[in-house]
Length: 396
Image 1 (cartoon, rainbow, N blue to C red):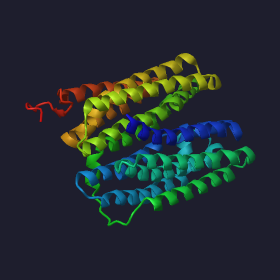
Image 2 (image 1 turned 45 degrees about the vertical axis):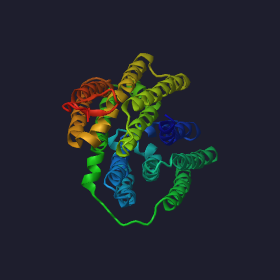
Image 3 (image 1 turned 90 degrees about the vertical axis):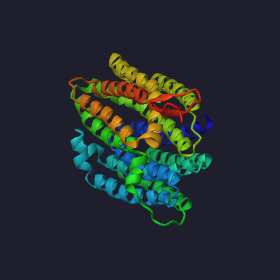
Image 4 (image 1 turned 120 degrees about the horizontal axis):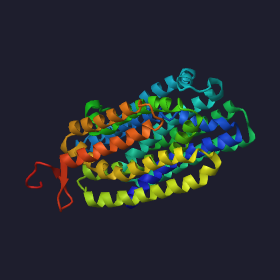
C-alpha cells in the first residue's frame, strides 16, 4: 500500500497543479480561463498514448526481455515524437479551438500554453516511470514535486502582478522547460538505441488503444453534450474538474500491478485490497472537493449529481477488472486483452453519440459492466492468490 500511495502521489501532484492553476488564473486574469482545462482535456489523451508506448511499453519490454537499452530509447523517441505532435497542435491552435466551439481570441494564448505544458508533463512522466520500474519511488516523488511547484509558482505569482497573458505564459513555460531539461540530463545514461515498437505496443496495448479511443470519445462526446446548453456544459465541466485527478490517481493501481507481474511478485488479493483502500481515499476526496467547489460554481444540482453519481459507481468497479486485465495483458494474451478493451471502448464511443447530455457517463458505465463480465469469464482465481487461465486445470 505504501508503494501504491507513492506512485499515486506523483500522479496526484501532476494532476492537481493544472486544476488549481486554471482555477486561479480565472480569478487573477480572466474568469473564462477556467475553461482551458476543458478545452485541452482531449489532448491529454495524446500524452497518454505516448506515455503508454514510450514509457510503460518500453519499460515492461526492458524487464521482461532483459533489454535495458529500451528504457532510454523509449524516453528519447517519446521526446522527439511528442515535440513534433504537440508543436504542430500549438502552431494550429486556432483551428483546434474553433473545432471545440470556443472563442479563438479569448483562449489562444493559454491554449498554446496548455498544449506545451502537457508536452513537458509527458517528458517528466517518461523519466518518473523509469524510476518507478527501478523502484526509486522516493526520487520520483521528489522530482514530480519540484516540477509541479516550479510550474505553479512561476505561473501564478507573475499572474498576480502581470495581466498580460503572453508574458505570464512565457515565464511559466520557460522556467518549467529549464527544470525538465535539467531532470532529463540527470536521469538518462549512455545507451545504445534499441527500438522494438511492436513489442512495446504488445506489453501495453490495452492502455495504448484505450487512450486512442478516449481521445475520440471526448472530442465528440463533449461536443455532443455542449449542444444541450450551458447548464449541462457547466455541470459536466464541474464533474470532470473534481473527478479527473482521481481517475489519474486510480491508474496507479495498474502501474503497481504491472511492476509486480513483470518481477514475479504479483499477489492478486493483496493488490485488490490495496486498490480498494486507494479507491476509498479517492471517493472521500471527490466528496470533499464537491463540498468546497460547488458553492463557487453553483451548477444545477440534479444534473451534477447524476454525472458524479455515475462516476462514483465506475470508480468502485474499476479495481475488479483492471488488475485482472493487467495480468491478462502480460501473462495470458495481449491480443485478447486488447480486443476486449477495444470492444468496450467501441461501445463507449458509440454511446457518446446518443441523444442525451449524459452520453459520456452512460457509455462509461456500460463499458465497465462489459469489462467486469469479460474478465471474470476469461480468468479465475485460486486460493493461492495466483491468477490463472480459466481452462488451467492444475492452477499453474
